[in-house]
Amino acid sequence: MATTVQTRPAVHGVERIGSSKLTEAIYRILLYGSVIVGGVIFAIPFYWMLRTSVMPTTQVYLFPPEWWPERFEWHHFKTPFAVFPFARFFLNSTFIAAGSAIGAALSSSVVGFSFARLRFPLRDIMFVVVLATMILPEHVRLVPTYLLFVQLDWIGTYRPLIIPNWFAPAFYVFLMRQFFMTIPRELDDSAMIDGCNPNGLYWRIHMPLSLPALGVVIIFMVTSQWNDFLYPLIYIQGVTNYTVALGLRLFEGHMTNNMQALMAASILGVLPTIILFFFAQRYFVQGIVVSGVKG
Amino acid sequence: MKPSTREAWYGYLLASPWIIGFIVFTVGPMLASLIIGMYRTDFLTETTFVGLKWYQNVLRDSLVRKALINTAIFSFTVVPINTALALLIAVMLNQGIRLQSFWRTVYYLPSVVSGVAVSLLWKWLYQPDIGLLNSILGPILRPYGIDPPRWIFSQEWALPSLIIMAFWGAGGAMLIYLAGLRGIPTSLYEAAEIDGASSFRRFFAVTLPLLTPTIFFNVVLNIIISWQVFTQALVMTRGGPNNATLTMVLHIYNTGFQNFYFGYASAQAWFLFVIVLIFVILALRSASSWVHYERV
Image (tube, each protein chain N blue to C red):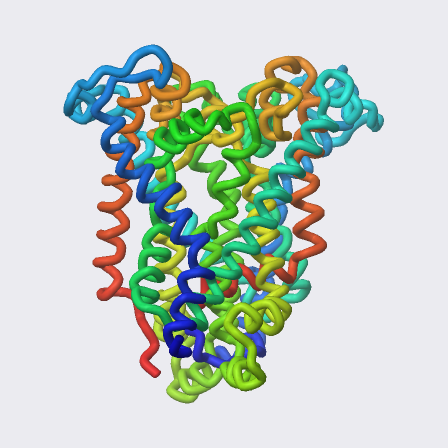
């Protein structure tokens, strides 16, 4: 797929289908109708979350449920912070996400560069292994890595969540390598003539050029770490060390009859990834194109 | 030192984070897992060699079988339906529609959020009496004397509930297909049109074949991801009611990290690994018969 050069979206389907304008009009109406109905269905859960979070208690548990709050009660957004150290949870999640993302971006970039640009024995076999580990169900390593971290005395710290990501996760190596393959070789040659060694070549030329790809890795890693549940569940001990995901779970256990506060906490929990998405939409799309289409 | 030798040394040096990580966090643990599976151990007080006992147990354990069936049902429904749904949305959004990037965001946003918050949200949507779903379904079904399902609280509907919830995440694949659709050269459509192909035929003769590599990549990834379903099952139902939503990874988690039979958990993880591997290999094998690779 990588070889097709095409930037204009391929608009097809209707322009000259049959001769009848009426057919086309019906087609358009059906098309827009489906897109809108589908879009509403996809958006409704978010609406319900918002609507619940601001409803007065007397209204939330009414049967049949009501769609619009009779008045807006924003104070439910304060409840999570009053009951548990949620601000701390956000800090903890941010620390884990940032620590993992920086390590993953740097390591996978360096490794991706060497796979894309340097020639060394076994390189191609190693890259096949990288691809193979991408399709490895990771839970087969769950117990032994736990044992490893027990032995290292890392349980109860964030190290088991962060440090493995510093060793070039396969998916990101693949992504970076695909990106480096698109950088023209002539750049390498002229730099080499100027006396650059491969190390300098990476830091001075490839690394600055690959900032967009690094952005993709960082965003993917931050999102996946932010949403992760299983590993924090296993490794984190003590409520003050909880991530947002663990905090939400804990909060649910204490808020069985305060759905507004629970939904408010959930909104706060997903808000950072949504904000990140809106600011970095370009990178999301780009990363997905590189990983999914050219795969 | 010859330049090529020097380059090779740099190659290994720069690739070393992956090489080390691969040994320490992938191959090592996988082999260790096989061995741990031969012990009865809680990693603290007890470590007894039990040989292949756990591996034999896996095949006989009715809970493992239940988890296996549940996860298989989940995977075999979510993967094809999500693929079709994502493809459908992508094709619709690719028809030169107005506000395309707005709609793209609407469909994609649910896949940006995931994990516990989403599980809590859906648990609320699935509330049988005052949840969103039944507040829509109730008025439609009740006139016919049908009560809407009790979703995650009912043994029959709990697993379908998790499956339906997974459709909400179809936007991730949609975005990939949308990018793939944009990569299809318009010249091919023009040629097809000159040949008098209908838009229906153009979709099946041009669009779909050219998209198959993308679909294939995505299906393989989704098979793997769907077999690892965990968070929803733990947060929403704890595997219940009556193990109706017990999944493989949840069972592994329970066995190891709740009941502290780490050896048995290891054996189950290997079992899961082999099963997923079989399905991935089947998918790879099938590729030659339906994936269209461009010959340039």
